[in-house]
Image (tube, rainbow, N blue to C red):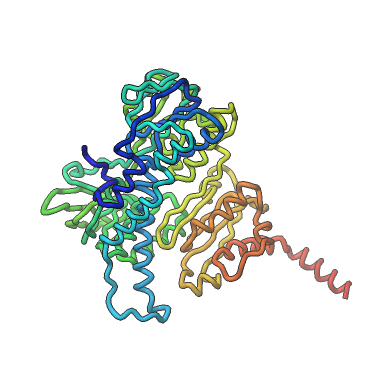
Length: 504
């Protein structure tokens, strides 16, 4: 039996991973009666739905055709952050002299050891998503391909499971754009990248979105010569342009050769993989050892027999309404299979909505979710809410407050003073409509603003909240001070002055 690419190389760490998320000796249970909920897919959305429903007393079946934990555990968030951690450690050592720490020799990186560390830690995390754990939670776990038999039952490898409600949580997978010659070479995606055991001396990366930028920078820091190709101008085209520019400068300093505004991109199988592209009027023809394609995702809708049960879908995924309900009212969906927000934390909270609505006839709306996100480059970019351009398109006038990290003491002391916190509020008010943070740990910092938006707390509330000094999060409090100073109009200042004179 051919091993899943995520399990390669099949050493001790990946053997442990397999034993947790798809044990070879697993025997599917025999169904006894109708399930309250049948969940197809054991990625984040499916796991949260199954565990939450079972915890509330529901009879639940969970079906997975590959590895429990989905992309996040096996080929996404977890392994990528393991690689990024190794890259950041490498960068810290190389810049240690700036802090008075002498490094006697050139920094040597063992890529094989860094990757093995990642695999070992991934295996350590895997029991959280394991078949054994979910069985202990009271969930019937089935391995195999699921397909709908009708609107009340699912077939798994010849076993029929009847249900009251079903949830599609099959996620999405890497997809390749139509690049001439790509089909003739063996290229990497996020599903195969983390199986590497040797550092590519020359790595090509197609797509300067979050995955492309994170991995391009990480591999450059680990020692690869990296060529990053993007068809648009610059990187991270969906992000705040000021924020993306700071990250672009950082990844360029790390050694990444950015070929943006790429035209006439072709791939040839010629003495290795040859990448040819035109960037800003100049032609490039580079022979590379490995090619990472990170420019698209496709929903996992195949083999589910969705047509037979009236579940509509398109190239973006399964169609759902605001209650996470598909076009078949007995079937719901959650996670990457149906959401434009393809993040683990978004899948988590969509699953919570599904539990309420599918089991208890709730009317919780997904549109009420306030979803932050983060790109884990160095520095990180985190965002929540609206960008300034989006607000303008929606007819919302905004005031924008910016706190540069170069004026934040902790950022200066740590040598992390490239970045900012930018907050947009409704014009003339303190109501926050969106924010972007560029900082070493922007993903941690954005939660304070997400909390504020979720619960209607304005900038003045943040400004009046004591933050420890010195921290980089103090930058957020300083924005509250900025807002409060705008309330001190010349008239109010004059009246205060007269009052103070009168009370002397």
